[in-house]
Image (cartoon, rainbow, N blue to C red; front, side, top):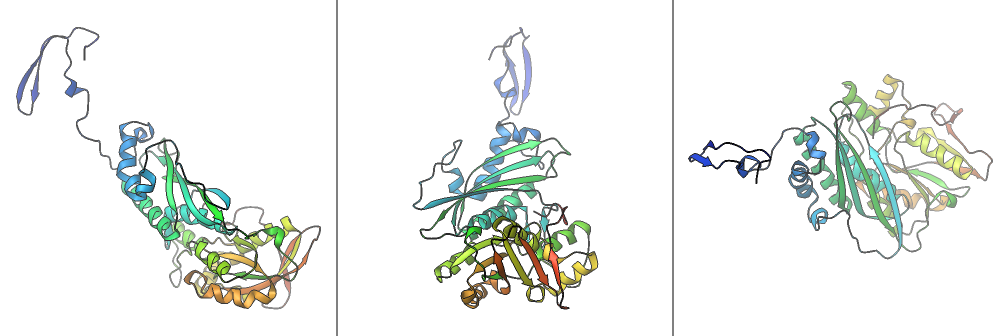
Amino acid sequence: MRSLLPLPPSRVRTMTGDRRLGAGVVDPSLLACPAPLRHATVQLAHGGGGRLTRELVERIFLPAFGSSAGAERHDCAVLEPPAGRIAFSTDSYVVTPLFFPGGDIGKLAVYGTVNDLAMSGAVPRWIAASFVLEEGFSIAELEKVARSMAEAAKSSGVEVVTGDTKVVDRGRGHGVYVTTAGIGVVPPGVEIGPANIRAGDALIVSGDLGRHGVAVLSVREGLEFEGEIASDCAPLSGLVCSLLEAGIELHCLRDLTRGGLASALNELALDAGLELVIDEAAVPVGDAVRGACELLGLDPLYVANEGRLVAFVRQAEAPRAQAVMRARAEGARAAVIGRVERQGVSRGRVTARTPAGPTRLLELLSGEQLPRIC
């Protein structure tokens, strides 16, 4: 390689002794790094599309996500179109802290998208994952997040088939943000959605509520409660599949994430013109979560979950649906908690019968009770 300016002859010290270079010639060995660069933290260059980007992909993402993500290095994944209707969903995850009892941002990113697909009765198949990394973020922690995502994908029966990475300046990214998009297949004959809810339908929750929000808050604020509180972070696709295989007529499903049970029910009531009534005493809430909520002034009906759903089924099928749920670990505390009183009302509403007897109106929150929990 010729220099733009004439260079005098020079002597270069090498591992094996001196080497004389001719005038005007730059030693190529001085212009290239002989070995891949290794860093303990994310650098801006990791998002530049060059050598460090390739190192990040080969060192972290390909080993974690396996052959499905690296079968062909290309700008997109080419997938065989499955038989049936396609379900498609996407979500972003900005939880803080990134690691908490029972889960982490990696599990959330996979399970959250898997669960969104499952609420339509779809069998999740493929996931795309995009990462926004902050300069200075620990490479070791990024590896931990990637491994967690890989384990979550394997347990959910999905493949991470494509993705992307961007790096932002230090102080502008809070470590790592993850966006996932998922594709699933809805089996023939499965129709699940708000339009199918009918007056008289029973409401069944798949387990105890509020664990995720309280678990994240406890680590974030350094709080200690009586009894360990771990997130309920889990995939729900297997639970939905079991209900369908049992022949349960599922009218509607909704996973109970931000805003908890109360917000999910309000969204359905408003969208479908429903009047819903729940028995607050029947709603399963663990003693540790209930105690923490009382101490912090929180209502467990509004606290986030990441592995719970509410199902709308015909009243006659409620006992069998509850039994199917309870046969699985993620549905062990499933409970019938209420019913659809009316449909076709001008403005939907949700009320709860309190343990003391009177009813209270459950409304949508005007703000966010617990920010950055997913």
